[in-house]
Amino acid sequence: MKLGFSGVGNMSSAIISGLLESKDMQSVEIHAYSPSGPKSHIEFHQKLKWHTSNAEMAQKVDILVLGVKPQMITSVVSEVAASGAKPLLVSLAAGFTLATIENAAAPHTPIIRTMPNTPSAISQGMTGLFANDLVNNEQRQFIDLLFKAIGQVLWLSEEQKFHVLTAISGSGPAYFFQFTDMLIKAGEALGLTHEEASTLAVQTAKGAGLLMAESGKPPVQLQKEVTSPNGTTFAATEVFKNDGIEALVLKAVDAAQNRSQELSQS
Image (cartoon, rainbow, N blue to C red; front, side, top):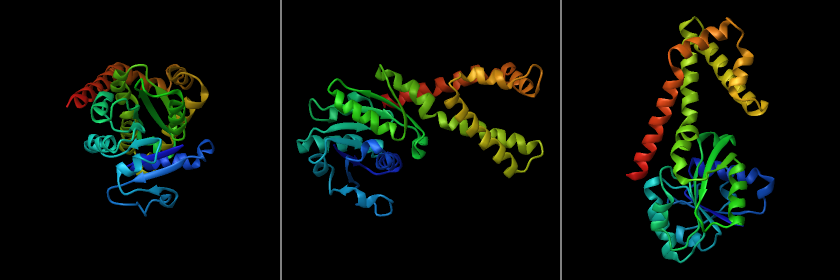
């Protein structure tokens, strides 16, 4: 399989790194194009076959990952269409619908829309995917393996669900970062040094996340297991409950979803 990357930014680099480390992907030939030329500062740049244009690369690959900035997506897709090549197009761009990409692509081009998140940089990402009807089973299976090299994947049953996915997993890491920062500030306010509070809060977030992922238990069950009646955890969670944190989280996620819908229409 020959895989090309148009744009080698942070997300494309994360995917390529995961690809190079995956035992299932050793036979994949990786191609790349960047308007500024080969990225010699990237650790793996010598393992890529660099091209002088998107059109040239499109002629050589089976799959083309669109890793450029959103404002460049349609021009790249149009360039590929003009070349006469029809590789499977895989979009990493947030807010770009299949219809938008299809309008710029050559007729009957297979396209997969994806939404990875930032933990993909350490192979702990969450990627949502949706394919148009022209994507075949072999292509779908390859892309599934590709994104599993940087975390977990979820194929959506409807493209419209990307808005909720964006609000949960796309924006979600920021929510956890913000809550951890607030926990650090609370620790400082109650007498800890910044270093002490940071160490406690960050490791607790890491451990709690791993426990949720590996225990097989729902989060609410894990919460109950650490909450003794009238204990310290109970005192804190009661404040969350009484101050309406559940409604606040729903309001925030809904705001993110609504903004995603607005951006997709602009």
